Length: 266
Ligand code: ADP
Ligand code: MG
Image 1: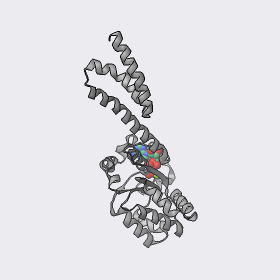
Image 2: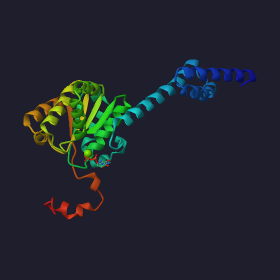
Image 3: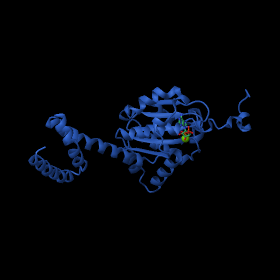
Image 4: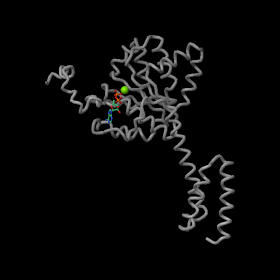
């Protein structure tokens, strides 16, 4: 580069720094400087160079937006679908892959993950939540018990309708461990309102150790449970995980007497 061209480009970069700050797009400064030589060497057009610079800013914004949404979601542990060992649950691999593309969220469909403890329900619900956040959706994760506490607080404060409206702005709400503790009747009714308010508006992922036939006992009332299950599964993928707890794998725990007695084949 000639001395004059160098002076011109450093003047231009100074101006870019100022302009990028004014746009609140500080990465443009760095990308513009870094890509300028590439562009000159590679014979890029002006349009190609501008697109490459803006692309860096946009993808960085999306990534940091996704990180913010993941942090705000309140996951119990950050478990991604990439960390999931599909050999343990081969039956759901394709369905989960399809769900991970996020189409169910734009259609306000639900996902229900059923299966015994330790089979990966919370892991998969979290992984789908992270995928949703990466697709630009706002996500909230909590256990069924925590949701009931939040709704009860809102109800007591006379702002349940506001709270339900606020929650509808989240594309995905995850309710982990339905059935882990039975609900009082008031709690069951509040939970029913959460399900109703999202019906055909926004998605839910529910996880449970119990089959649907056991939900009547959780909600204290077969009619409430049936009405709720009806709304949840009307537009839903129901995935059933199988097998032994992943937590107990390769720990030699299958020789524990308490576990062995459960297996009449032993
Ligand atoms: P559940 O919610 O069904 O009781 P979790 O999702 O909490 O089970 O899984 C229990 C533990 O085992 C977690 O640490 C989870 O990450 C891990 N886990 C379960 N299944 C798998 C799997 N197939 N691949 C990798 N980790 C798994
Ligand atoms: Mg769990």
